[in-house]
Amino acid sequence: MFWTTIVNIITTLFFGFHGVPAVTSGAESLILNPGAPKAQMSAERGAVLAANDRFFLFAERADEVQPIASITKLMTALVFLDNNPGWDKAYTITEADKVEGGRLNLFLGDEVTVKDLFYTSLVASDNGATLALVHASGLSEEEFVKKMNEQAVKLGLKQTSFSDPVGLSEYNLSTAREVALLAQAAFKRSEISEATTKPDYLFMTLNGREKKIESTDYLLFDSGEKTLTVLGGKTGYTEKAGYCFVGRLKNSAGREVISVVLNSQDKNGRFKDSKSLANWVFTNYDWIK
Image (tube, rainbow, N blue to C red; front, side, top):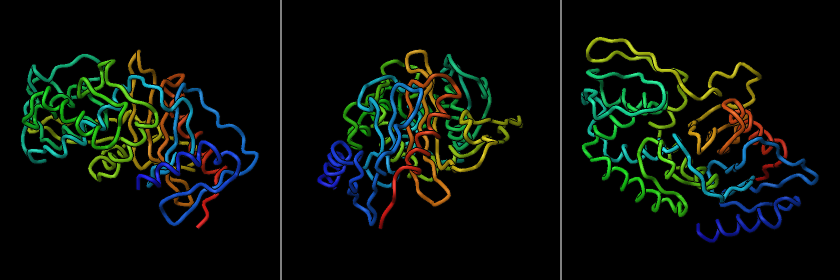
């Protein structure tokens, strides 16, 4: 696997953009069509990864480190799944779960299940729900962040590090390339992919209050031509990170990629960029068995 990855990287850098077959570890090779136009995006940094491999089909300033904002929550979810006290366990929102930034969906005294915390964290990118999820795990915030950094090492993410589980810290850092690899690992977990493909989530608190949570992933509400299916996605924004998005996208032929854009032009630009990069790959690469 290690040598396959090295070959893939070398092929991309030196041959992929001249129409030479790109080696993969699967049953298919990919060829970039000669004369393919340059991919267009407004984001400063981007990458497109073959969803089921470690082969990059596009990279632009993809190894530059920057804050990743709420994309952090994908790592938080991964670590939580290894420390889940049980989906049906009740949790009451306290002052310790209060955090600045973003829309609040849960309030002091709300009693909810751990599953509802998990979905509120990922569907709405709710900072308070995410912090409550960490507290529900039984770990301190420091212990939880330590496990996030340990998981980054396990995934081979050498330029990725975390300072908080929510994504508000400017020291939650990664690159477009490593965000793609993080998302690849996260979206393989059915719990994460299911939560991040819901346009909304409706539930009742254990106190009897109805909650409707709406997704921050506008691709799930795209009313245009449905050329792409979202198989997982996560937004992020802070002033330092800019508008960010990572999504696992599938075309009508069943091909899948993970598209990453960091520091895009605006809120909607990150979604346009992500679609544009995915469509560029699907249009200009040939999959050959």
